[in-house]
Image (cartoon, rainbow, N blue to C red; front, side):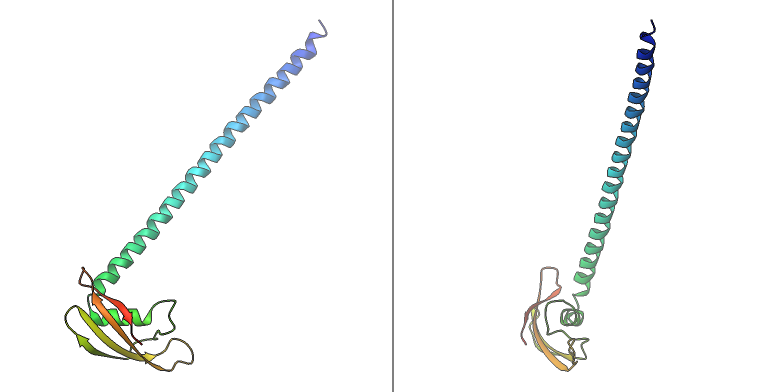
Length: 139
């Protein structure tokens, strides 16, 4: 009979240990799924906000580029890859215009230091939305 008492005590401690381990495991699984859900929601929200910003910016540029002056100013002053960019367009002259195509010469200070006076020519064309886009940089 004495030999059965320690076995029951060990069994109770073992059951208690297993119960605590299962409870800890469940809590860990719940926390992991909660973290995954929060990560998924935050990533989705970020993607929605970024795509909404890009779509809004694209619509704004498309609507604004219906004016040839805005299209010339935007295309000759913005961008990362060309050295032939202006800080701002000071003078603009229309060389050729036929309703669908325009050749424009714009001058101003160059973006690259030293900011020298620079003159750029560009060929602009209308797309299906009646917006002007830079077809060729002629300078």
